[in-house]
Length: 198
Image (cartoon, rainbow, N blue to C red; front, side):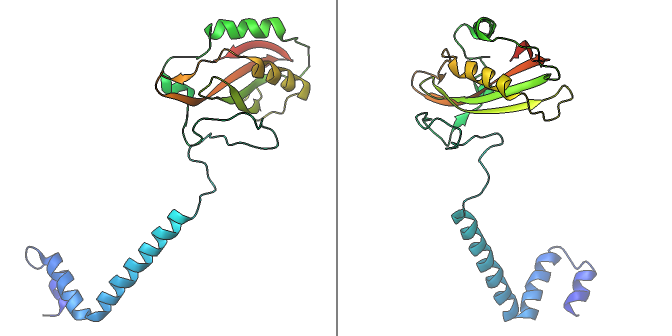
């Protein structure tokens, strides 16, 4: 009985393994060579992928040092392991919590009516294991959550005050102090600060 007839009829129990054995016998050395070629190609491919450095960051939203905009004196303790603010399940990690941040901006931020400067301005940054901040990134959205470029003086004012906040609580615990990402989102209406989130 030809090998393909045996398999197409279903054969008996274990017919698939019998088919594989008969196919290799039928093909002889060709199967062995094919197997070795496939195995070698797979191993080569794996070796290449581990040696090549990916152009992507490890996690979505990761930030890396940018010599053009970042303070070179700011250092993270473990660049490969910067936690997200929500990993601690403790809410906003600031001395005096959100009311202290609200007071700081209320006392120092001078609102100017700027028609059309409405939406959300988010400033994201890293708090290192010493409680210092750096790697600030700014993103603006209009009220329809579409990207928006805000007035530069408005952005600079909010960014300056954010950088001046010095009550950030160190992440982790006494034995394992860690770096983490934090953000503040400013709700704006015609250039006036309406609310700070979170």
